[in-house]
Every structure is written in C-alpha cells, then in structure tokens.
Image 1 (cartoon, rainbow, N blue to C red):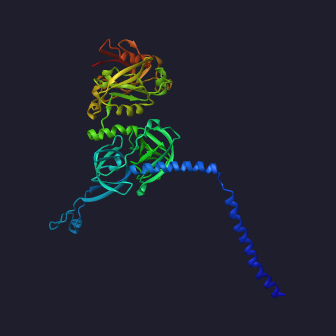
Image 2 (spheres, rainbow, N blue to C red):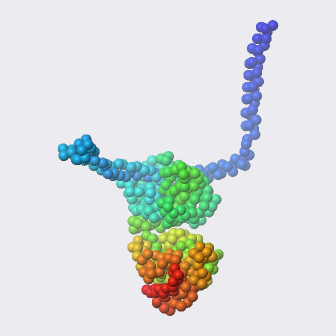
Length: 486
C-alpha cells in the first residue's frame, strides 16, 4: 500500500507541472490578442515619438562639446629647514625656495553653432564655460575635433563666442523667436551633461521672463526661460529648442540644492543673444545702449499717490544731466511704461531692453507724467562704465516717499510737519552737496507747499526757476536749503 502511494505521487508531480505549464503558456496568446493600445492610440503616440526623434536628429549636429583648459597658478610655500624651525633663523646654507605651482584645470561645456562666414565657424556659449581658458577645443556631433579661439565674452549677460576654421561643411543652427515662447510649450534641452555628450532631455516651458534673484552671482542683465527639461553640469551653453527644431534659448543655470537637476533649469532667450553675436563678430565685445536714468520699482503706496496703481513699468527717480534721457525730455518722476510700443513690466525688464538698443538710433519711450501719457523720442547712447561713475551728474540725487500713517506712527510725526520725506540721498549728487539728508521732511519748494509726491515732482521739474529753495523739517527745526539746477 505504501508503495502504491509513492508511485501515485511520482505520477502526479509531472502532471501538476504540465498543467501549470499549460496555463502559463495559455496566458500569452490572451495578451497578444488584446493589446493595451488601440491602433489609433498607438499611431498617435508614434506621431509624437517620431516628432521628437526628428527634432533631435536635426538639432544634435548643431550642438557641440566644448573642452577648456586653464593654467592656474598658486603661490608656493617655503620649505623651512630644521635650522629655521628650531632656532627661528633662516639657514644660511639652505637654497630651497618654493616656486609658485601651476595646475591645469579642465572643464566641459556645450555650445551652439550659430554662424559660418567663409571658413570661420562661430559657436555661441556661456561666458562661464570659457572663463579664462588658455586653450579651447570643440568636438562636433560627428566626432570631428577642432582647436578654437575666443572671439569675445561678456560676463554681464554670461555669453561668449568662439570660432574655429574649416573648409568642410558644418551644420548651422536655426535660431527661433524667443518672444513667441509661451508657458506650456514643449522644449528639448541638448548638450553634454556630466560629460555624456549629445544628450537630449525633454520638458515644457515652465515660465518666461524669469529674473535671477540678487546675490546668486547670476546675470541680471537678461531674463530667462524656465524649463523642467533636465539640465545638469555640462549643459551650460547648449541649446533649448522648440518642436520646430529652432533654438529659442541658451541653457545657462539651474536652481538646485544638490547640484543636480530638480526640474528648475533656466536658459537665456535667444533674442537676447542675437545682438551679442553680431557685436562679438564686428567689435569683439558687446555694446550696450545707455539711457541715463536711475530707475526702480515703486511701492504700492508710492504708485497709489501718483495714480499709477493699474500701471506697470519703471519709475525714473533721477536723470543723468546731458544724458540721452535728459536730452530726450525724460524727467525725474516719469513712469516709463513702453519702449517702442513694447510693454515694460519692471525696472529690470527696462534695463534688459535698453541694454539691447543700438546706439545712435531713436527710440520711443512712453511715459506717464502727471496723469498724462507722453511719447518721447530718445537718441540712444553707448553704455560706458565711466559715464555713470560720477554722481555729480545725477539730478537731483534723492529719492522721496510719501509719509504713510505707519511712518507717522513709528516716527511720532505731526501731520503738520509735512507729507513727503527723503528716503535716500546719493553720495556726491547735487542733493548731497547741498546738505539734504535722508529723513528730511520736505515742506515747501520755492514757496509751493509739498503735500504729496505729485506736488514734489511738479515743483522739481518747474523750469521757471533755476534755483530751488527747499524748506525742510529736520529733528525739530526748519531749514532752507538751496539746490541749483545745472
């Protein structure tokens, strides 16, 4: 009986295996006959996939890998002999003097081929990619390598242009119109992250017109396109492209606590770089337009008092005398809302637009002055660091703000003392030279009572008199201070 039981088990095991195998094999045809996607759904997805593939194939050849090498010198240290160490005196027989040491520092980045003039091929990248490189080499997508030279670089916009020469055919990038980029647009980021050459990542445009925050060391002389397409170290200088394969941005920086991509990548809009390309080739440097105003973003209370609550733009606190703005009729107190019909959103936005304006050409600035909209023609100048180095040319050199109830309460001010207070005085300006100080309450100018900001700027800009007499209240006393218009 026991023997029969053993035989039964021996027979049953293969049978069980056979049944499991049967059912296992029988499951596969069920899935094959019932695909997850319908033919229509699959075709739709294939269209998307093929579109990304075509864009990638078109863009990869115009994005290059940039290798840089810099020689860094570090001061050496003197190797102290035992004689000097123990007795504090130099060993007269010692000839050992440590020399400065040199290190070769290498870096990798990306670049975009933007132009070919005869045998010269120009590549746009970031200033921080080339840095102070002693040698630059470029590797194309097809593996060809060339030694390159720096044409020009500009730390203000973090852009640089390099060049190499070849008689061979080289693909050139199609540059798009970054002004047409909108939130939600599909984009691809192309570059060489972490040395992985010719990498493509995808995402959307998360925001446009982004400004970098102060103190980060990121250029504020341009706005940025924000994207969630993965951007990492080595992507700098690479291309951000739209679904047409057009370059709409130059990948520049990421916001990250780890040093890796967390979906916060930023690219310089290509329209902000087009003028720089021409300037680099023609002049070796970027030329910036100069208007000649000190501008800012006024507070809500400030705008409310001037009737500008619903306006966007930049407020002109001061004007440089004999500057393009001064000659064009822009006055302190003007609120600039448009440049050549383009709306201004903030003071930084105005700075970026003015920077790209060509010198010598007339530009239309739309301003709001005492509730009136004016269009002023200004012949732009060239920005030179020396033109803004002297505050003595600033008029008037002070910033005033309305005295709110909160300020009155904190400073324990009587309403009869005045309604406008000086918030800031620019060192070396006419206002500073006259003796005006931050905290002075302006009661009158040329016997006209100053009961709001509108009255202050009306009196300040009144050309009937060259001399301005300020009656101010300071620490319990009243003073008369004269300011002479130049």
